[in-house]
Amino acid sequence: MALKVKAVEKNIKFTKNENDPGVWRYVMQPELYIALTQAKVIKEAALRSGVSRGVMKACWDAAGEVIKAWATEGHSVALPGLGTMRFGLRAKSMEKVEDVKSSLITARRIIFTPTVDLKEELADTAIQITCYDRNGNIVKHVTSADPGNVEDPENGGENPENGGENQGGTNQGGNQGGNGGGTGTINQGGDNTGGGGDDNGGGDDNGGGGDDNGGGTLNEG
Image (cartoon, rainbow, N blue to C red; front, side):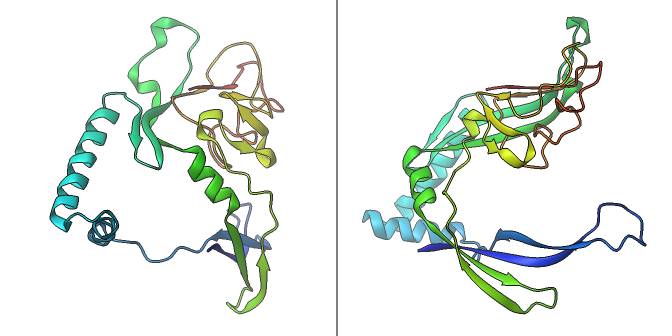
């Protein structure tokens, strides 16, 4: 088995100016198969386990309700054979306790942490890349030779292009902005798993551009 990825040549603009010609770049993204319905998954699980489809559906529904209830109570809940799921959030940090309020929370999050076995299987799976030019024509096929690194939500993930490696919730690559306090962003129970987020090294509050407000980013969890 192999994961399929497509690299499509797209015109990328860095400004909102309609006269900006932009640049053409090959952008990679996973090429997903059709979405599997819950009924199909239950049917397959029933066949593999030897129980009836009705019993499997009852177990599936019950497990879903338990996971939803416990996760929203703040527990880290095991997903059999896959990993754990828990609640997290993004919130701004404040210097004074009297300024702490719920409106500082910018997003509530659901965080999935895969098991070691699942991460190893993903790391060992080959990736096949199909390249499409701007006209939709296939111009190249590539079989991956990447190291197979898998991001770890518990340790902030690895994002070398956007600020280095984030370990244990501390952004070592670029989000250690000014130390003078002020408003940064806190991830409680969260992670820092990719580019474009609030917490990567290319963010507004990074160490290279930190100002006197110390807009550094703190990840808890």
